[in-house]
Image 1: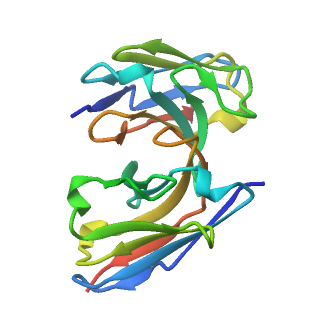
Image 2: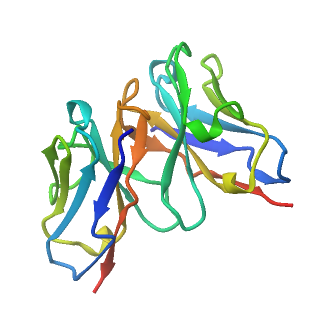
Length: 119
Length: 109
């Protein structure tokens, strides 16, 4: 069965960096786009970034442009999110999610990894 | 930029009742690329529908999705205890590529 397991979250000071990872299994990872979605405590869902299956196209939402970079390693079935210049408002549970194809809905989600940005 | 609005914010109902949740888009959603998700406390979201009305694998048929253009609806014909949760709509394919609505909470009355 499909499994997505995030790791790499933690507590970091404003301006710091973290690298999130998502280990995928149970499906042909290289065939599907992958996403990062975040959820601040007690708030709704917010899409962060997507990377196409062959890594050619990747996009992220404006408020993380220049700070967050999504990447993947299809040889290892791994998805990553490099987060630099972190802000207090980046505090959230970060989910990785599998796309139904390329740039479609999100049919499987991990359980999330918590990022806390605080001084 | 497409903005999604969901109504009501909270829906207070009893098991066995019908739930009707609305999602409005500020612009027409391309190809009706509209999805619905259910999220229970402490859990990741679960895909219910994509393409406005295409039921995801394993979703009971008491759930139905409908609508097109800017107006979409998620209906739960008879609420089961496990259906009390927060429901989000999402559009995919228009700039910004993926946006979620603010959610509707379905609570016990």
